[in-house]
Image 1 (cartoon, one colour):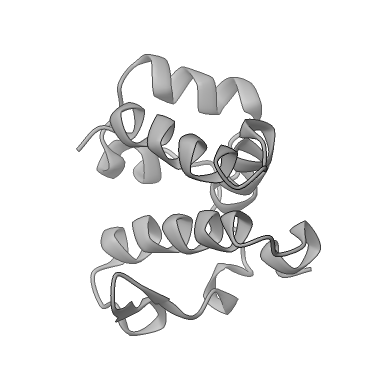
Image 2 (cartoon, one colour):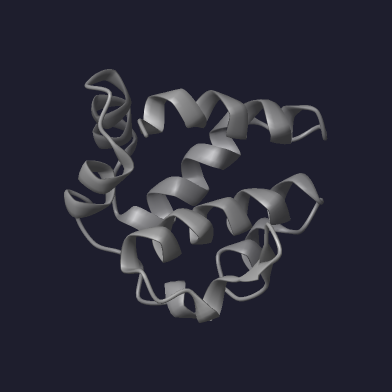
Length: 108
C-alpha cells in the first residue's frame, strides 16, 4: 500500500476534528525522522509503507512508548516490525484526532 494513498485520509480524519494537516506532518516527522521536504518527497514518489519506513532517517527512540489499541490490536504486541510502525503512526493520528495535546502525543 502506498503512503500517498493513505496520508490524505489521515489528514481528513484530524481535520474533521478541528486539527490541522501540519500537525499530522509534525507527528509523522517526529516518528520517522523525515523533515518536511523528505516527507513530501516520499509522498510524491508514491512510496509504499515498506519503502517509507525503510528509508526513514531515524525512527524516534521514544516510539516504543506508543501503546494502546488500534483496530482492536495492542500496538505494543504487534510482532511484525513494519506493521508495528504503521500502527504507531495510526495511533498517533488517532490521539491527535481525539484532541490530545501535542506534547503528550510526541511522548515528550
